[in-house]
Length: 311
Image (tube, rainbow, N blue to C red):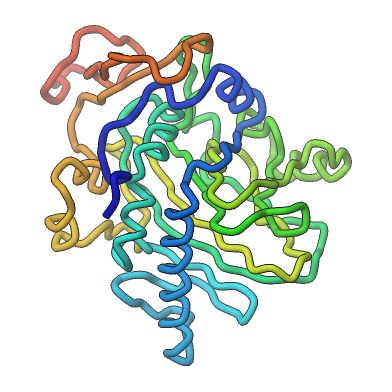
């Protein structure tokens, strides 16, 4: 495993311009987060896993090293809980650059909530998308120092180049802050297609977005195969959705470096290690520490125990 398994993270991970783009649109694309060597290793690991599943004759619903084929057709394979399937999967999901970006977007320490991948080829090219979101802004977001944060965020990294016809993720810009009917938002976006953005980026680029943002897989119109790595991250006290809430196996957790275990299992404490930026703060500021405090509207002094009976 390479240096990307190091648990240290830079802060802020985004430049002011990148953070502004994320604030306004609900997503931002950072090109070449992974090196060419990292992309090659991770792509090879996913292709090997794909071949293993196909060799079973009926991949859908099968598990290999706890990885599950959620859905399968000759043109599309959706994998869930890839974490334990190969060391390269762990390397991506704990990559310090990825972790730094999601921590900044959530506002503090996070836990791995979802690990997956999508491998697909040319589809019908339909202009309608399966739009959805995994969190509602009314209950899953907050504002700190004027900046929007979400308790559940995604980092999607394309391991193959994404051109205009290669099925990059599509999003409805600005929908992360809207509490209107999702059907109404989608209908309005179809009326004004300029509000639908689709990711175009070289291999190794990462799409970071709030899960309150309405998004969908883009149609694949080219002959190239599209391969996407998915990492979902949330507040460390939240329940994991991996494998129906099972989370990583205890045996696997014991095998990973101790500094990574809290990222994989969460932190069942009353305090949260928060860290926030201002918009104007430049990227990679030295010495910006976490602040442990109650997860509350009133920061106050950090507390280490459960709330009192009258709290």
